[in-house]
Amino acid sequence: MTVEQVKADIELVEMILPAHYDVKPGKKEGSIHCVSNTGIRKKPYAGANGIIIDDDEDEKAWRAIVRKVKNQFGERFQEIFHNVCFCHKDFTIYLKP
Image (cartoon, rainbow, N blue to C red; front, side, top):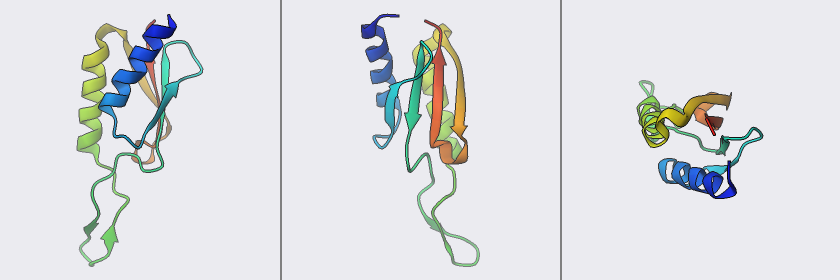
């Protein structure tokens, strides 16, 4: 895999993910490591007891991200592996070279 291809892949992922993600090459060839302190969360809202909930995962938004990644990379897409599952804060996208 060329340096240009890696840069192009990272740029595509950066366009898909929110700006608060740090997107870099992963340890394995063809992998892209994505980390955020925020992750993919719903906007804060009041729960049934009136307490503000600000750490609820936004699964609808996550599914849209996964769909976009799969569409962008097509046959090259292998999997998304979570290093930290909570709010999708730390994960690696694996692509075929």
